[in-house]
Length: 163
Image (tube, rainbow, N blue to C red; front, side, top):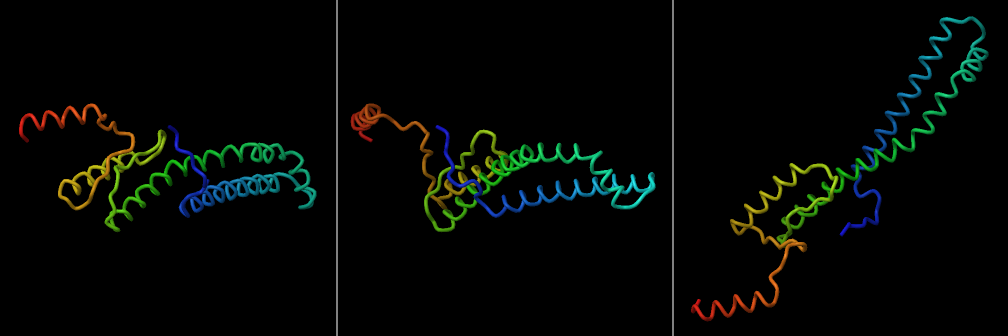
């Protein structure tokens, strides 16, 4: 079953990285645009405003390309942020549960999430802490639980063997 998310941005980290990527793209585009114009000024004679008007009419397709591509780049950046921020959020909530001495589950990540290596290390740490009795580890809700029939059979077997 796919987990549905209500909030699109779960952490200030997502806003920071999204704004950073957006500002890098904007700074890059303004820099390229102005460098192209400076190159034109060096190679052509005429007034500054006339040169800029001419430059703009010749180069506006570049701006149109940026405006067309920017939403796709922004969408990709947001998706990538979710693949990182989602796992970070899960790690933080588990750490808070351990700190509050509440039972925890092993970390499960969605398909496509990043930080899978950290998940494996974190889960190994949780299992080691549970083995020492430092935390209570809950079974995953997706793990198969013994059926009522198998529980009765194991109970009957335990009674017959005297254990």
